[in-house]
Image 1 (cartoon, one colour):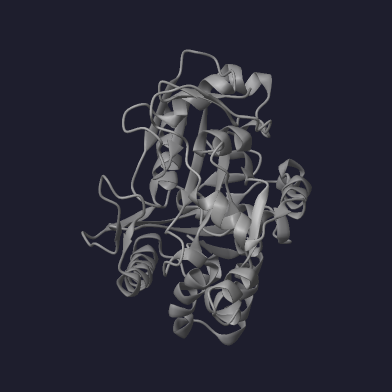
Image 2: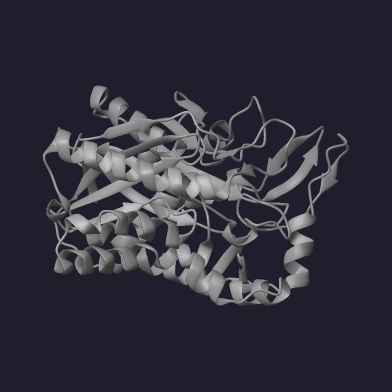
Length: 383
C-alpha cells in the first residue's frame, strides 16, 4: 500500500521585516544576513495570532468537506505551544470543523516534532487505510531584540494531509534516525526565549547529518545519485547548505552542482520567511515542489533535525502529475502581498503580549482564525 502526502500548504502572517533594515538598525553589514545566514526577510506575527491561527490557516487551504469527514487524527508538531496542558490540535480540530470522533494532540521535540508527527501519521494510515491524518508543523521562532539569534527568527505553519494513494509524495519506508543527549538549544520552563550554544548547535547539526547520511548509505544501499534532491531543516538557509557541502567530497563536481541547484530551489520560501522550527524542513519541501522541474518517480531525501538532539533521514517518491495538486501560485501570492514593517513597527509588534490577568479583552484583528477575545485566560478565535 502506498502512503504519503496527498496535499500540502503553508501559511505565514501578513507582516515581514527586510533583513537589510535589521542590519542597518543593528549597525551590521547586511551581507552578514543575506549571504552569511542566507536570509532576506523575516515573517512577523502580531499578538492576536499564534500557532493555532497559523496552523488552522494553513490547513484550511487544503481540506475539503470529504477530508474533514474522514480525518480521525490531528497532530500538531510545535515547540511554541500556548498551554502546558491543552493542545493546539484540539482547538484547530474544532475551528476547521473536522468530524468529532478523532484523536487530536501535540508532539514536542524542538524542530523534530513535525517529522515525528508525520511518521506517526504514516503508521496510523498503514493500519487504517480508509482514514486520513492531518499533520501541522507550526511555530514562532523568537530569540529577543538585539540577541545573537535575532536575524534567524520567523514564524509560520505547514499543513500536510496524509493518506493512502497520495497525489504528491509517497513514503519509501527507509527512515534512519539518530539521538544524542546534548544541550545545543533548550528552553526551560520560565524562560521566554531559548538558550542557545550557537557554535555547538551548528556543529551538532552538521555532525548529525554526516552520521545519519553514512548510516543511510549503509542501511538503504543508496548514494547521492539516487536522489533528485536533498532537503534540510532550515533554521537559516546557510545552515542546510553547510550540511550539504559536508558530503561533497564523495561526489563528482557535476553531482555537486546538480544537488546545489535543487537546494537553491528548496530555500526560496525560507529566505523570505525565516525559521519555522518544526515547519522549516517542510517549508523547504514545499518550495522545492513549487519551484523545481522534478518528474514523477524521482526520489527526494529529507533531513530532519531537532536540537537536543534527534535527527532522521528518509525519502519520498514523487507521484504522477503531482504538480496538479500543488498550490504554488497561492504560496507566491501570499509571500508577495505581505506588509513590510519599519524597525519601529517591528519592535513594537515584537514586544506586545496578550494580557494574562484573567480579565476580558476584545481585539479587532479580522484575520481568519485570529484571536478575537481573551477572557479568564481562554483564547477565543475567529472562524
